[in-house]
Amino acid sequence: MRLILDIVEAGLYPRGMNKLVKRLLGAIGIFVLAGGAVLPSQRPLRVLLLYDMEGISEATRAAFVRNGTEEYAQARVSLTADVNAAIAGLKAAGVSEIIVVDGHGSGNSASPDILEDRLASPARMISRDAPFDIYMDSYDSSFDAIVAVAMHAGAGNAAGFLSHTYSGRGVEYRVNGEPFNETMILAMGGARFKIPLIAVSGDDQLEKEIRRSLPGTRYAVVKHAVDRSTAEPLARAEIDRRITEAAFEGIKNLGQAGLIERRGPFRFAVSFRTEEAAIAAAQAAGTGFVRDGTTVSVRADDFVDGYRKSIRLYGAGVNPSPVPVPGSPPVRYWGARFP
Image (cartoon, rainbow, N blue to C red; front, top):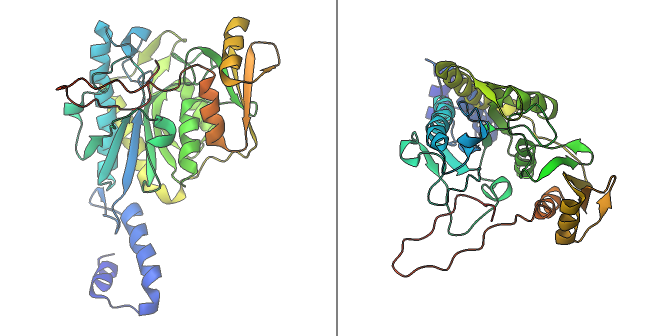
């Protein structure tokens, strides 16, 4: 290996092999371990790390994910530990740029849910001067991979801890008849730029969903979902080990990472608890019922377009930008929030 690197550094190879050598260097940077660390690739790797809260290792009741509760303060510490464990794995694998995005709507508009001042380097939070959709608009083609921390099972999974898809207002969320969770939505968004979702953490119910839909994605189980309202966490040291290992292995095998593939046209169907709620959703989206009168659907040829239409069924949208108060600091947005 040292001989190969010496030859490359000295330029002792035919000029016609430039492209091949560049590919070789990239492969060496990602896949070859030396002294417990991955050799740096020729081009620095850029990773998006999105986090939610329901899948936090130590969140065991709903109060942990809601701003204003005593448990929320504890959950922020746990969330920060989970995210930093993923950062440790990415950093050990040679990633030099990690962009973190807040993917949870806790109701905390003053700061991200994570303890930003405790975020491990080289990671940094993303924020903007206007709300944005975390699943579709927090990255571009410059990213090499996506990691999702503290995620949860999708709507319709009665055994998943605090399971839902985008909003608890819907009891099922399906795309062309297939149950879809938020992790899958994120993966579909990344796939349009050829960005793979390489690692995820959450409870053991989400693991089952990920194994079916994203079999090549590394998964770290951090707690057992007893039911929708209760969970049992693993020990902190084991949680850190699992998340770090999943992130590290995701980068190590980046070259073999697959992309989620679902072909259009798409029908997004959201089921509500009552017919009244479904009627309100249909009026908001300008569409009609399907099946039993409590399910509303929208159609689109493009997945992203269909997704954006589907979230309007919840009446969510994004918060309007507030009118600036003279002398006040600029408002920061970590993502789209429910009104």
